Amino acid sequence: MTTSSTKLATASRLIQGSAFLVFGLNGFFHFLPMPAPPPAAGAFFGALLATGYMFPLIKTTEIVTAILLLSNRFVPLALALIAPVIVNIVAFHAFLAPAGLALPLVLLATELTLAWNYRKAYSPMLRARATPAPLTNSKDDVIREARATA
Picture 1: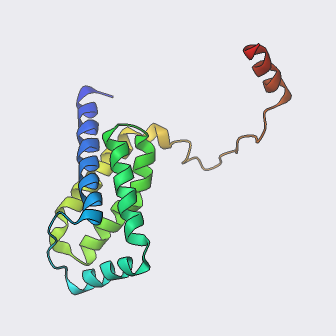
Picture 2 (picture 1 turned 60 degrees about the vertical axis):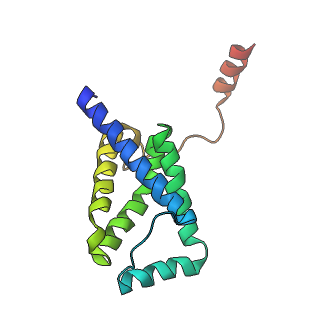
């Protein structure tokens, strides 16, 4: 990676991590005032809350992902975990609350930037024909491991 692409990836990681930490925590502690949503958006939020588990699951995923991104640990895993959340945030704002679409588009841009920068981590997952790893070691592997530890 070039220096400018490394800086862009770092900035994207920190922006996305910070946003999801703040909004994830806000889902539990309600420290940011929320404007009244349009009727359809309010019904959608109501449905998420009515399940009893979906809203806390989403907010917990946001917080865990934020911690991983901000600590620069397991970044490809964090990006894979948060991708469906970002898609739903963008769709929610595009179709139900378009006034707040700017921040979701920034989050989408940071996600795509990071996914591109970490694309090598995803290449094994995107193979058309992947073969599973063997469940047990072969006899030769067991003998090599035994000799190496002796």
